[in-house]
Length: 353
Image (cartoon, rainbow, N blue to C red):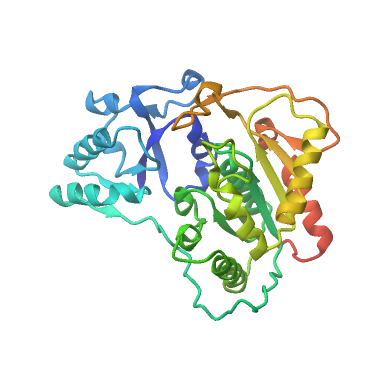
């Protein structure tokens, strides 16, 4: 199936970088607001805008399905685009559930399909525990990707690891942090984690049982686990769930290798990494094996606003450190993967095909 991805921006570059992992054949990346990426002239000719589609610069014959992969600032504008696409006989995929009711009505009007993309692939375990029950051990190595701040490219790291482990012949099970996870063959995080009807204790036991079920049913060599939201609040305006999701998950499962992704900053030093490592150890009971410095950081004039705005830093020179610290350029090679693989192999818990 040939698809157009929308809305595409620099924050979605992981889709282009790891398009070989995507379930469908991506023909075009349609950018929001008719704004093409800065580096589009140096890239393949697969970026487009909605205006290009309206003006006939790209053909409806090139694709079957229009795939909505994220929220947009203007919901009404999205529905106009969907209506235009559907009126030309194209099916729709949408990972944002809040848009589904309206999009379904449009699809029915034009007799096209709203295709499912596995919004929930993990079954909620039947409650067979009480507050004295044990946390069941997971016999499969677990690699966790967590972050401090939002928009710190955790999903880029998750796809990087997935790609490298699969390329080396390992069988991978994975729970991802984004709603688009299902389109890459990952399980999305189970909904009960974000459901206030469940107590924190029940969430811990339920997620522990989920991890055990995945390990038993899928029999992977390694489980890759994305941790939602941030470990720490940014400030009193942007609290990022206070790190509660990380606390619940790390009480449910103890990872064997942990990567922590950070906001873009060229001023991190050994003292900073030491403090973060101590925080992770004593607050979440995990040891950080590697750090990743992302290319995004919030604009200073937005940190007290209702919504954060981010600046993209294509290059950074990081000071030398005694810690294992990586940047986006390191995702072009196997250095980070080899560090993780080496540690897991030391445990002797899984074998390569």
